[in-house]
Each structure stands twice: as C-alpha cells, then as structure tokens.
Amino acid sequence: MRIKAIELRSNDKQIVDFFVGGPDFRNPYILKGITGLDAEEITPMFYGQGETSDIKFYDMVLQPREIVMRIALNPDYNLGGPADLRGDLYKAVASSRSGLMQVRLKDDEVPVGVINGFVTKFEGPVSTREPEVQITLRCNDPLFKALDITGYVVTDLDEAAPLIIDPVSTAPHGFKLKLTFTGSVNPFIIKDPDDEWEFRIDYPFISGDELYFSSVNGDKYIFRIRSGVTLHLMDVIQAGSVWPIIFPGENQFEITGTSFTWNDLYWNDTHWGV
Image 1 (cartoon, rainbow, N blue to C red):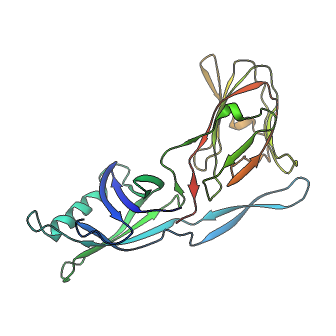
Image 2 (spheres, rainbow, N blue to C red):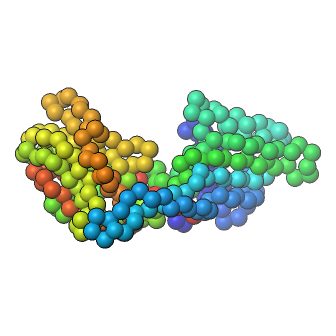
Image 3 (cartoon, helix red, strand yellow):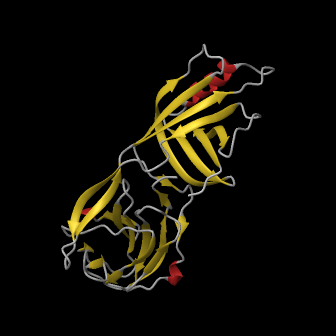
C-alpha cells in the first residue's frame, strides 16, 4: 500500500493533514514520527480442518494496533500560539459520542486505508523550545480498510462455480452479497472445489426469496426476505460450517442449489499495514 499523506479526522471532520514525503512548514502541524503502521504481531488462531486433506485452518489475527504520532506545533503567531494548536487537538480527542478518531492513509488525496481508534495518551509538554505533542491511538480493529467498497460485476459470475478476484487487498477479509432465488432450494451450500470446507444453510428457499449474507469480521449476518418479511437464519447454519472469505488474488468457490440470480457482491479492500 503506497501512501503520500496521512489525515486525522474526528467527528467526520479533518483535524490534521500530513504530507509524508517531508515537512511542510506551511502546515501548523508537522509529523515528526509515526509508529504502528506495520503488522507488528500476527497470531495464528486454529478454527477448523480440511475435510479431505486434514490440513489445519488458521485465522491469522493481528492484536489491537497502537499508533503513536509525534506532532510538531508550527503556529502562525499572527493567529495564535502553540497552546491554541494544542487545544484544537485536545478538542478532537472525543468530539462525538463514539469517542473515535480516524486515521486515513492517502495516495494522491484518495484514502486507500482507514482505521479508527481511541486516544489513550495525549502528551504535550509545554516547556520545550520546540513545542510538540505525542498522541497514542488504540485501534481494536487493527486492519486498514478502504473507505469505499469494491463492488464486483455480478454479471461476470458463474452461478455454480464463481471465481472471485481481489487484486488489491493484502489481507484476507469477509464479503457481503445479495441474491434472489428463482426456484426452490434446500440446502444452500457455498463450498471449496476440493471439498475441504463448506458453508451450509438448511432452509427451504422458494422463488422470490432474497438472501442477504455477510462474512465480514464483526458484522456477520445471514437473513432472508420473503414478501417484505425478514427472517434471520443463523440458527439453521449447519454445525461445523466454515464461513467463506476472500483471500488476495483468485478465490474459486462452488455453489449447490443454483436456482438464483446474483444481485450484489462487495467488500472493502483490506491491508495488514503499510
């Protein structure tokens, strides 16, 4: 992931915008250093085993991320001093009920990675010759995600054997989809072509049913809408099912119960770090 600027936002408003290619002395805030943008500690978490190969499946998990920024205060003394700049940063610590501050990594003004965190430290010595502050953010969701979704062209997808390609992400991630059934289906299965795993829903779908699905970490759901009535289906997922996810590059799936049409398939590009 290539970046040229780092933006801090709070309550959906820009607070600071740093150019990472070097200091911009016209900027009231100058980034002197930043840590915590890499993938510091990745832990393998066992979650299943291949049905035919017995290969163990591991979810590679990052611990909560801690981002530390050293920011030099560069005031225009005609407008105010370091205390005013420091005060503006203090205001951003909790400027909404969520208490979150957002870090946007940008390439040519386009956000390519976004992460949210809570300010856990704000260190601002007032007796230094070169005034600065140090802000520490704790990000419970440690992955950087694109601000905008990547929508797949569903007309390119085969029903029985969809090939889904993610050429941008560097980390695996979940996805969301919507499809509409054109006939009776029971069960509905998404599985690996080599029968290593499957995700199975034991439910009698009928023509006109709309299925909404998400395997996004922290936002998993599956429900059906029939004639405007919503029915959640988490309780009819077969025990031992493995949620399908998207890995960087090519992802080949097989689907049984193919009496349906694709409506939507999308995700947010996801990265381990810079």
